[in-house]
Image (cartoon, rainbow, N blue to C red; front, side, top):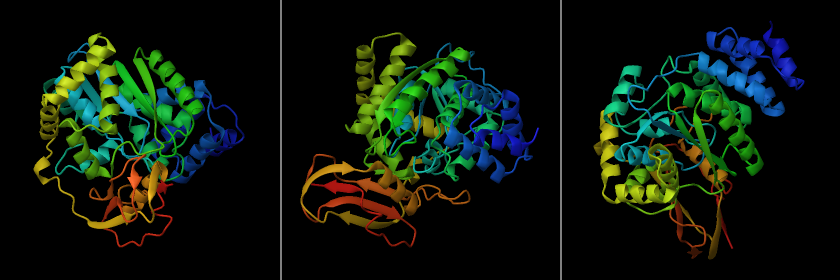
Length: 408
C-alpha cells in the first residue's frame, strides 16, 4: 500500500477502504506518513468528503489507536457533553459543576482550540497550576470523589486523534463533517460515558456553517454512538454571535465563575439547557423538573462550590487568576442600534491578540482576549465603549480588525 495512491484516490473522490484509512492514519501516528502527506489527505477529505461508512471506519481506527476507559465500577450512569466549537463557549466549565453538584458523574476529555474556536483545555490551562494531564488512575479518582473531571487526552486514549487534531488546527482542515464526527465521537466513546450530549454550533463563528450540515452531523454522531451502545443526543445552537461577553481563555473562566454565582446571561441560559437535558436523561425526570433543580443548584451556590472543588482537585489556584495584559478600547464611531456582533470576526481578532494559535508552534497567551460591553438590540451612542481588547503583543489594529460590530 502506498500513501500517495491513497491521497490521489481521495483527491479523485473515491471511497477509501478500512485498510487504506488505517494505513494512512496509523502510519501518521507512527511517523511513517509525514505531516505534509497527511495534510494533503486531510485537505482531500475536506474538499470531497467521506461516506458515512468511511466515517464510521475512521472513528473505529481512532478508538483502536488507544484504550477505552471502563467507568462502570464508579457509576451505572456517566454523562459527557461536547461542543463542536464556537467563540466564547465555556459551557463545560458551567455544566460540569452543576451536574456534579446534582450527584451526576460527568467524565470529559477535552481538546484545544481549532482555528478561531476556543478549546476547553486552553481555558483550563489558563488557571494557574491547573493540571490537564491526568493519568487514568487520577482521572477515575477525581470522577469518583469530585463527580466531574476534565483533562486532555492521555497518551493511551485516542492518541491518533491527538496528533491529527493538532495538524488540522493549523492546516485549514477543521471544517469537515467526517473529521469532526470521527474526532469527537472517538474521544467520547473511549472516555467511557454512556450518555453523550453533542452541542452542534452553527454559524460564522463555528466549524459548521449551515443547519443542513448540522443535521447531517447529528445523524452521523447518533449512528456512530449507537454502534458502541452509547445514548447520543444533540442540540443545534446559533454561533453567528459569540456565546458570551468574554472571548479568550482566562476571561472565559472568569465569566463562567460569574454564571456559577448566578449571573443571568446567554451563557447561563445555554448551560442551563445542556445541564437540564443531561440531568433529565441521567435521573429519568422531566425537563421541567431538571430545569428547576438546575436553577436551585446555582442559586444555592452548590455548583460554584463544586467548581472550586474541581479546580483544586486538579491542582488549580483560583486566587492567582488575574488578567495581566495591555488594554485597547474599541469605541463606536456613530449612534444607532447594535444589530450584529460577528462571531467569526471576533474570533479572528482574538487570534491576532494571542488567544489562539495561527501556526503549530505558536504559544497561547492566557491573558489575551476580548470583553464585550454591548448586546444586540442595545442603543449605542457615538464614542460608547463596545469592547476592551487584552493583549501582550505589539500589534496595530486596522479597521478590518475591529469591524466586528454593525450599528444601524
